[in-house]
Image 1 (cartoon, rainbow, N blue to C red):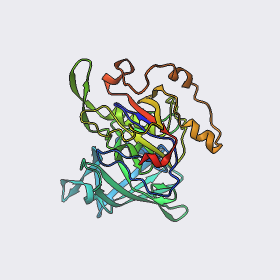
Image 2: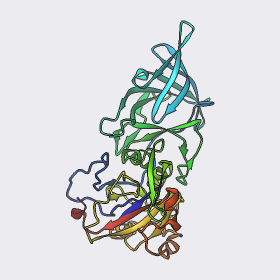
Image 3: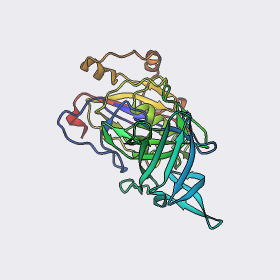
Image 4: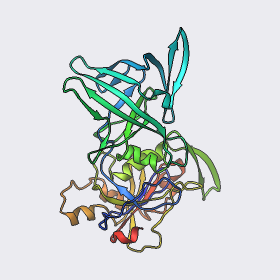
Length: 338
């Protein structure tokens, strides 16, 4: 199936059955990648820099090497702050925060977050994606656990400005709030695929013959809808873990390029925007759910989406000029995805 963002994306709705691993899209050259229904795994969504609230928990201390850290800022995915040494403020950022501890309380429970490792993602060609290994100590149960887990394994997080409604999937724009986006969930996965919401890209309008620089923030949000097959933009996913996706966009140059154009068994699923699908084709991931015998709620918007003509052509009428449409496709043979 194809999927779209503030550009165009693509994907297929077939699980990989041969046991071969599928790499995340960290290069411009596209290849099918594993898809899933998780928005953000097990994570702390909504860490307020101004007031220090994490879903009802208050941060009552952030220290590194005995020094108090304050004045937090996040630039892209890089966390920085200030420590006071002999009365003088000194900036601290990135791996200098390794070992830092954050104490959170809500009056009943106390958690201690420890930054075990902070590093640049060596596989991301942009060179501005930082990974955070964070563990959490529950003082009540006296147990240390990873902040982020995916399929039972500890995974790093990507620190990002803004937070997401875990029920609706909506991005909540608030520059004073950040989210630990867990690897494996859609929020982090779309960063891994190159749609970094803090970055910009060039988008060209072939009808007008003009190009402009746009933010990738809507591309990233549209990607989260596409990854989870959230057709109606209501937070309800219609996919399963292990689904292969082929993502592409209409940026110049494209971040992801279509890999399945010469595979007739892959058909267009949808174009996507930050609020869900903009149109839908006939090759839907719902077919995969039917084949697996998985029950689901039929998307209330789907009939209207399928009434839109020429899905996958990215006409200006569906918002391509404003950088918030993507495209997607569905394949029937997982071996053809590679």
